[in-house]
Length: 458
Image (cartoon, rainbow, N blue to C red; front, side, top):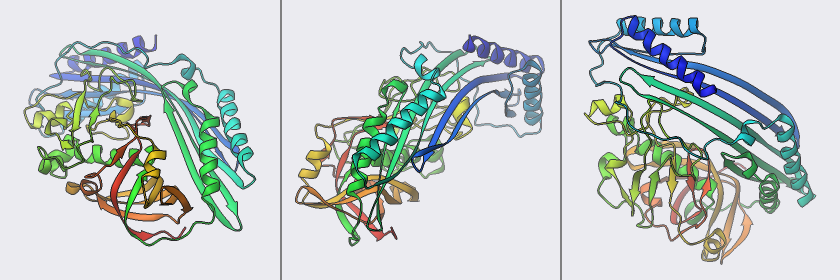
């Protein structure tokens, strides 16, 4: 019912644009039902839920002047006003010679398992129960646990896209995510740790397991010691790995960064720049990815794309929408963000990155490390030199020294600054379990060397 309504809105918007004088047109309509429960100091302090909907309209005049607009309405008068405004923008613009036209229609099929009724019907009381389980579990693990914080979200998203060449597509999916951070205290010092879980099915999220994992590591993290910066072997939890690959994939494999010259793929494609064990793909059809979709925001069918194969960065892994593809006389690879995500990032990037697993686990990685660091998470990441993927950032929520195969003591957080071309050139071990996060699914990873340049104040 929801998708039928959205398809009708998009079709009417395209017909209206053509009637008003557009040469070509595309419209995508959407509805998002979002709910979020936040907690801090071991109690819930916020419950929010909202429904938003709207339509994105693109019109193209015969001389390739374009107008794009987004309006948060699905009502007939509002959609017609959006089309009028898009045409007004187009008439005031210069021709966009990069744009060769909207995508031609291609066959696509709906995906089983993308939408979960239990997630879409999740109530505030359901979320409260899950949060209560997490808080009680963490406090039951140790009297040192002082506070539990985090959030739990459930979302249902629907969109439809139509264009004047005959594209007509629609999709829906649900997502759920829970983050739990535990703070422990001993003799005036604090220990932190965090755990996160994401799925299209809220029933897959286990708050007891999450809180137990975070609490155990948090208690171990009190009374951290300072260690000297330098080069260390590192064992990265999946949380930390996902951070690195969010930047590597977004900076390296977007047509925007490739065309402006900031992508490392432009300079290193065809070379084995990473460890031979590293294989990375973007695949919205793989059930391990959170944002499982059959089509992109322009109605182009999603398909698997290899980004890194046996350590080699692939030129064919560059992700295009129709506008960037036209700039190089290519076809879109199906990476135009859907209208809901377009508000956050309006450029083609891989949203369904999967790092293929190995045959190890984190315990084995720690056991095989004589002098290194275990890192739970990374944050405050900033790109320093994108063409060599030089990143800087801080460790977070549980950093430990590894000595002779054991976590010997917690350490004060460190700042790293390193090229990922160097850090990922030697990966002795890859985890066999792939964990799903928002835009990627990754295993734990041991790196032979990562460079740390400073020590945090906490």
